[in-house]
Image (cartoon, rainbow, N blue to C red; front, side, top):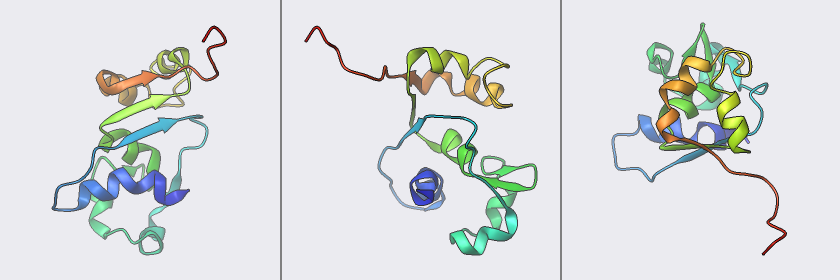
Length: 115
């Protein structure tokens, strides 16, 4: 699970071509924040703490890394994509979501019963 959350960020740290990435957000309550002392455990270089795209108030944030580095971002519904851009539903991330709104879209869960 953790590897999937960091993949876009790790690929961006490499100095070689990378595949396009998509991050899907299900619930902003799970932000993937860890103490910076876990860098070695995750195999991340110390320089990531100085990268504003990964560092979050002295911690490592995999949500922030995915948000900053993903080529496209999807959510579980079009409504949720709108909600997370507002201050009340964004868990403190509204500005980041609005900055990436051009690549953010919601995909409706469920099935189309008319098909």
